[in-house]
Image (tube, rainbow, N blue to C red):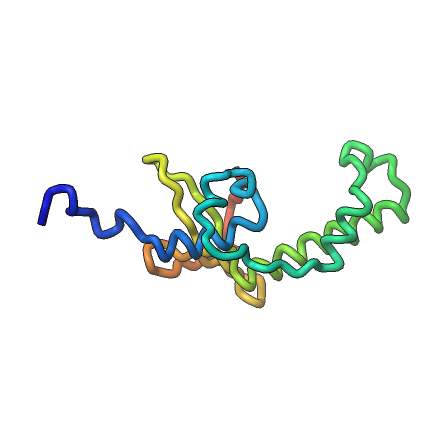
Length: 144
C-alpha cells in the first residue's frame, strides 16, 4: 500500500455520511449550509406536515414573563399548546431522531437517539452499541 492510500478504518464512511445528511437537510442548522446541501445527492427526506406544527406557527405562545398576567382560559390554552409540542417531540423521538454532536477534535458525530414507547428510557447509539439511560435516574438534562 502506498502511504497516501492508508486510512484509518473509521476515516471515511460515505454511505453513513450521505444517509445522515439526508436526515438533517430538511430542517435545522444544516439547511443554511451550502456544503451539506451539496453533499445530499438525492432528494431530502419527505416531511408530512402535522396539525400540531401548523397550529404552532399560526398562533405564537405569549411571553413567559406574562404568565402571572394570563387568565385561567389563556393559561389552559398555553398549557394545551405546550403539551402538543411535547407530545409531538416525544413521538418523533419514539421513531428515532439523528442528532449532531461536535467532538473534542472538531469533527461532527451523528447519534441516533430514541425513546421507548412507555417514555421511561432514552437510548443512544454510540460506536455501534445501544446505550440506554433510564429517565427516572437522570439528574440533569441540558441542551446546547
